[in-house]
Image (cartoon, rainbow, N blue to C red):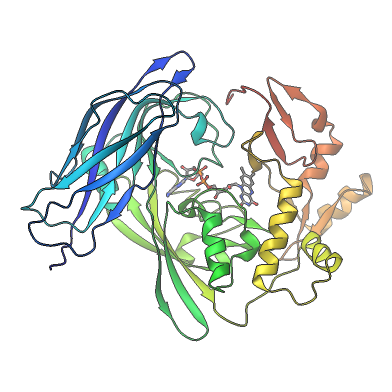
Length: 411
Ligand SMILES: Cc1cc2nc3c(=O)[nH]c(=O)nc-3n(C[C@H](O)[C@H](O)[C@H](O)COP(=O)(O)OP(=O)(O)OC[C@H]3O[C@@H](n4cnc5c(N)ncnc54)[C@H](O)[C@@H]3O)c2cc1C
């Protein structure tokens, strides 16, 4: 037996049959196969199973391996909507391979299922990426080209068709890289689902992100706008963010300070927007003496109402999950991107002046000596809650959320 170390990826071009609204769409069971230890000279045969979840037949025109170290076989017959298929892969016996990552590219695909607003923009080339190496390979071949980085699509609005390549980041993996009695460092691939990571931490009794449960989207996107909810932000637990520069393919690990986190922002949303692709993040989490945060009024009230006086991290996650469910629309039902607005931050003096004119305005004390005024209150009191235009409106139970009630366009 021999352990081999090399990463490979596959590349295929299915022809997506189009007829007005109809189109094929592929969903794979898994996109990465860990070969582990394999016998020298064995064929390494593996099967990738997929389903056509679209509405038109799926036809494969070409399928190849990006490194030449694997030999994939494409399905010869069209796969009907709802039908399943398999791609068989053997690795080239002269080569050495450990992980087989599945990297595929779709041409002229609708982005409707790739953004939580459900906007039906079209992508000229949607490339599914499952390793850092694939990003570097892509950049080496496409140095000057514009590209768009896509995670779960829950914080993005497509205002037109996208003519340049979209890299859909699907890098997986959760790994404990260091721990002592009190803390643990967890390294997570950018393509992992954020909410699933939170529940994995709860199961393992790792504290720090329980208040951030039920935020949709991917792990790699979480630092971009420094996701926050119910009194916590990801910056509270980030150790570092690793990724690749789009201009030259070089790798950098940004320390927490270098990430320049602020309220719903970071260096990745400002000067490095679309210039740096996060591939992996490391979180520093607690194993005991968890820093339980119940400052947020609605969370605190919920715990009191339910007789939970000393909440565990599991209690917090479950409570936040239920509160969120009662307040926010399910984006699979009504397309939305969650809260669309930031609470304006003003000084104490400014608040005093505003209160003179609008005594009922809702405000909260912010961390420094300034105040946040409620964006939801402002929207409601400007009468925007009842406005509906071209299938876009404000959600009835939460003024901060804009929803797509039909086939709304991005502009
Ligand atoms: C119902 C609902 C509730 C929400 N609640 C909250 C909330 O409570 N708090 C909160 O903070 N947010 C919330 N959001 C917003 C959203 O969930 C987060 O911003 C989330 O982090 C977006 O992740 P995503 O993978 O979907 O990002 P995407 O929408 O795919 O991308 C967002 C931005 O990040 C960039 N990007 C994505 N991946 C990478 C990467 N690997 N490297 C570099 N750039 C990248 C994209 O180019 C884009 O500019 C909510 C959204 C919805 C729909």
